[in-house]
Length: 471
Image (tube, rainbow, N blue to C red; front, side):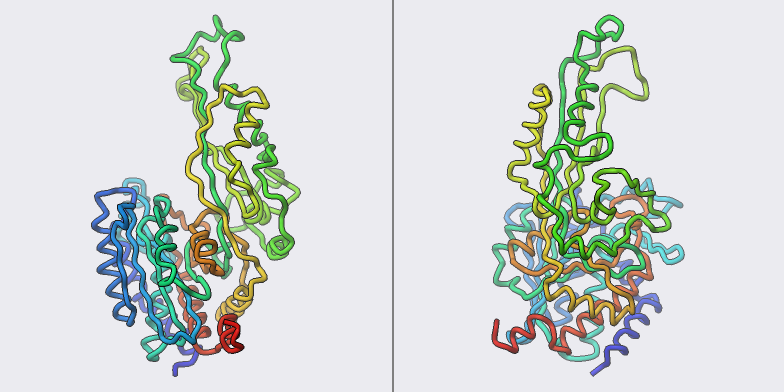
């Protein structure tokens, strides 16, 4: 049996030889844009021709459901069961990407042709999510190339609609609960806390978007003739926003906040520092709740942000009171926030401040979820990553953004570990999306080490429970 160190060396050689770049090139070339119906054939071909064939070559049994129940989302489940007496891992990835934004990339880059500049590998999906799920698949392939068995059971769930809100992913997982049964969930998406810091995050903040609209009248009225007599929708909008969040980013409605910052979350964030990367913007120390550290604000608390607002034409202002104003806001929230009464709380706050004329329209809402930092899988995985990298592992209770973690943590009831192979400056969703070769290389080594440890050391939480007859 190949040793752990030999396996890590093979992983490094695979990247250094250029083979990982070549394989990622083939994935990036597939224009799997889920927001465009014309690319649906390409997305399904990615599931069938890329993923299914790859899994079957590794001895997995594959189930595919294309456009499941007319959802516009397609799914693939691949399973490899070696023994019911072994631990089982559930992994996840998404085949789809956002629009290529082809005309906006620098230096004439084609978003669907992987290109390199230094250690940056540019291409749509290189960071989100093709580069990340390729690393995890390749780790399994490298292990199986050296031995017949993994030493654990594993299932993969792939979807083709994460970038459009994962339609019916939760329903699909619930309908296939038995097939997706596992002891732990391990996946890769989102960014590390920083490029040089191996990271495990345990969930995701939720996101609730809503619109404030003030359509008072058609057209504008001369400000000299009507100023002081007509309600100004722009001024009203500014005041309405100010009843929810003040000009320093502090949330003013208690119902939009969690009850408290748990001690276990505060503890794991004590050593986390954010906003110190070479290309990171400067963190405003007095913005939002300044009683919290930047890490606590980002990973442990709620923020309410104005995403967009308009009234009349700011580029060509005229001497007229505008007739309408509109803004889109977003609440990023953590576990412990009561979202059932979110609309009621916002409406009540506006009405109490006299803004009954402001229309409120709730938009998409992603649930927040996370596991506790003291879950036994967390130190087990952290120890494995540290043995591979020689660095301490950064533990985050959740990422600042949103992922469909609730499907796995709440619906399937699994401890969830996300081990990202990207970094905050990867420019995902925008022009010039890229992966860092150094992060992908280290990611491949980490996953080889993690899967090796799971299959050979028999010291994981589930293996211990199996040995003692507790499960």
